[in-house]
Amino acid sequence: MNRTALITGATSGIGKACAEILTKNQFNLIITGRRKNRLDFLLNELEKKHKISVTTLCFDVRDREETERQLSVLKGQTIDVLINNAGLAVGVSSIDQGSYDDWDRMIDTNVKGLLNVSKNIIPLMVNQKMGQIINIGSIAGKEVYPNGNIYCASKHAVDAISQGMRIDLLKHNIRVTNIAPGLVETEFSNVRFYGDQEKADNVYVGLDPLTGKDIAEAIWFCISRPSHVNIADMLILPAAQASATQVIRKN
Ligand code: NDP
Ligand code: 8X3
Image (cartoon, rainbow, N blue to C red; front, side, top):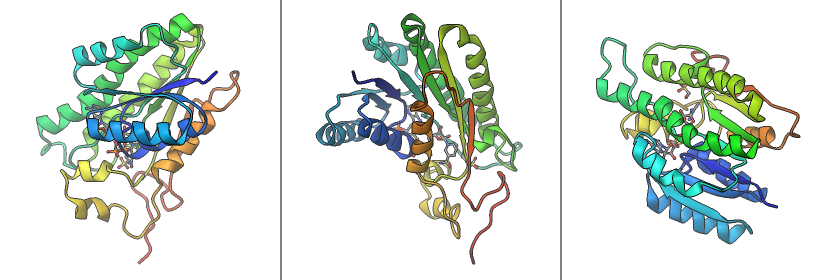
């Protein structure tokens, strides 16, 4: 029987690449995001290519009531895997210059949004007596870099939440994995720089960044392990990156 995964933030980047690799491996999917046209497009594309079913749920993970309402349609379904991927960085500012609005967007999406989704899915997994949760953290959850302050704080929170989930859900046979990527070229930097594509492109100039597919393949490795194996934590960097601040660029 096909297994089922729920992926948040599947409309681009890492989440979309996860949707592609999971359907290729015969998973049925529930994909979420705020951009309905992209969700619909992905549904058509994936269902055409593979003999699987895709459900789309369009909502903002920051909206707790709406998240609960949308996810309530899943009651009674088996959810084998939850990929908590939806997230973003907004701005690159020194702590004394940052805006409340940017801080709220990051904390409300990366931390509270992840919790809003998890709170609705974990009870299903507890009932099933099995499950796997993949939280997308970051190298920014392992290190802090200049002007990364609140984004780093939000990803350190994801790292801590992954550890807490692993401890508390042990008795329920729910495996928890924290994935911590370095530089991945997606829409991430475009969002971080408020749509300034030139600034976004500069982040990756002179180096080969990771792709969403690289991260999705690592996630697939975690998901495809036998049930007695849990990959607890994975830091994945481009070969040109040694730490959050150390990269080597070609001239
Ligand atoms: P993208 O911007 O390409 O994708 C982000 C996804 O998150 C989109 O599908 C977006 O969907 C969704 N999303 C953002 N905000 C919300 C929201 N409020 N409600 C619902 N969905 C939301 O970036 P990435 O693929 O790179 O990012 C995915 C994850 O990976 C993030 O958690 C990010 O922090 C993390 N990460 C990224 C790295 C990188 O270098 N790119 C490195 C390390 C971690 P929509 O806009 O349709 O709502
Ligand atoms: C995204 C990677 O280095 O921009 O989490 O924080 S970084």
